[in-house]
Amino acid sequence: MEEISLSGPDITEAEIEAVVGVLRTRHLSLGPKLPAFEKAFTDRLGCKHAIACNSGTSGLHLIWRAMEIGPGDEVLTTSFSFIASSNSAMFDGGKPVFVDIDPETWQIDAEAVAAAVGPKTKAILPVDVFGSIPDMDRINQVAAANRLRVLEDCCEALGSTYRGRKAGTLAEAGVFGFYPNKQITTGEGGMIVTDDDEIAFRCRSMRNQGRDPDAGWLQHARLGFNYRLCDINCALGEVQMQRLDEILATRERVAGWYRERLADETRIQMQKVPDEVDVSWFVMVVRLTDDYTQAQRDQILETLRGKGIGCSNYFTPIHLQPFYQEACGCRPGDLPKTEALSARTVALPFHNGLSESDVDQVVEAFRGAL
Image (cartoon, rainbow, N blue to C red):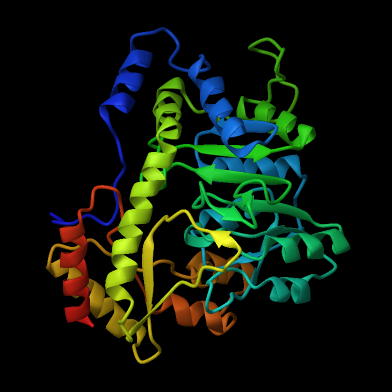
């Protein structure tokens, strides 16, 4: 058993009471908690529409369909991400085209995006990696010049801002995810946010088996899916949103403990957060210097686990996953900056349940393993 876990949700009695309250009603799905949770997002972000769904992956899929990204359409994106971002573009025949990263911010390189636009490019999928945000102004400029769609994968960035604008509002549409390691959780779940009426209409319909809002239960206007988020999950999410400022402040404090204690460690590099970004901390990932090989990084992870400290590598490059090598012809060496980073990342325990002494223990063990 891990003595200090890698991640964990921040759940109080208020969330438990809200979930139990739903269980005492007849409205376990498509009840009042669904619109209440969605309203929490429109109120917080100032956006026009919020559409809850059963995962961030489902939300990405719905938006691609709403944008009519299909067979042969290329989507420029990063390989340094969780695999769902690229998978979503492939569900209906789209093709991810991977672009390398900025080696300091670990975000997709906006100038590399501009250089990668080709005749089949139809969209850009920037990912707000680890809660920070890429150069969205430049990405949107490239998109406008080439008539491309832009979908912001903000699954890891609830609460972050870019030049004063909230994550999720930086493109035509955005998607948040609520897996238990995220800033807030619904167990499983996601939220589409957009100001585009047509995207919102299509996503709401397709989320609910293709029904139009005022249609009968057995009337289906288009191909759809069961991507609904039930009221049990929504009740949990609504209370988490009520506590969001408190949750983010605690995560900021834990991140501060790490950054203070690791500031003088010359054998690692921290992710650079641009001046224009106010980051909402998702994970605590550090990069070993180039003096370390991937095998040495893996040994460090094993050493930490042996001391009861949860840890991982974040992320394995998507383009080197077996499926992508076969489907897209990707090969080692295609994205040297992404590959150099991925070979040396270490994710340390990060969640609101950590005490300052926990962080001291992790840092001491990590330094000893280096």
